Length: 380
Image (tube, rainbow, N blue to C red; front, side):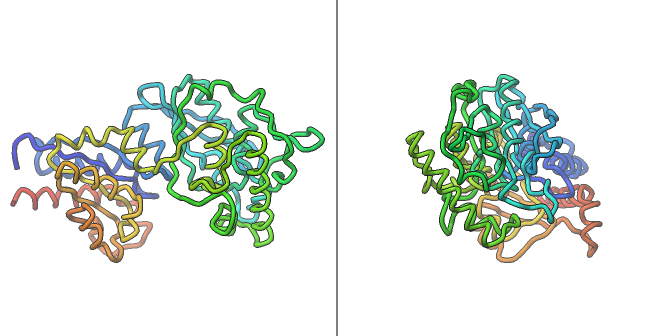
């Protein structure tokens, strides 16, 4: 091992155990225990889901702000958004304001849940003067096509009598007029990128309501109503705004929020890992490194479908850098990952234990495994 050896540490979080930043710190501790001369470059990662905002903030030395917003059921809740280190890019996760985890099981009703709070987070970012918005839309509790976002940003969705629609996907069949007279003008000068890892259209058997509705507590009857209402919503948009959103891939993401962000905010859909790779400047950091380490809580055959370790590995392989992955759990059929760029996968568990104990001791286990990997590398 040469004297100026450099390792890029680019893991995802280990859910319920460690943030991506904490994983980086634990990895470096193990490395330095063996060889203090090794340079470690921390690049906390995420794949567009939970933890994406935190990873981007950590990687850019940005700041997170708390805000009281309207929750999925119309009640006031605390949510947050971030501003990246350059002060020009706002980042938020719709789940923070409109997520399924915010709605108790016995109150999950897609006919009434709203994305209004997500719109309030967007407005808060605009108030900070951002030039770009990064929005993660996983984990939604909604099926309103982004109607709540539009309302929170000053747009009016009116029925035949000129009354504002209420919250939820159950109201969209009443939509008669879209009035954007007072829609937040600042959005015209802001680039919006949306982390979206599904290609579902807005409506139909592969659409938002049919594919995701039951998972969010809808009955079969509700699913039919919601799908019909979203189709009406799309028809009104096409008629009045001259934009056809019905069959665009990704429009059905997050209960149709994908459609709302594309139509009303001119949002561009990107895979979550692509977005994080870009804004953490991962590729630039990998170019001159000697090795890349990544990982997440569980690695198995599904890791090949847009998950962090494989996204990191693809960039590393462009520059012929060896890739080591760490996982709390190693699942089945991982051989495909070796073919796609990961060179070695290490489980961090040192003994049979309960899940609670495994989560509790994650940092120690990462540190010890990192130490052992470096000891092995030094023998080569």
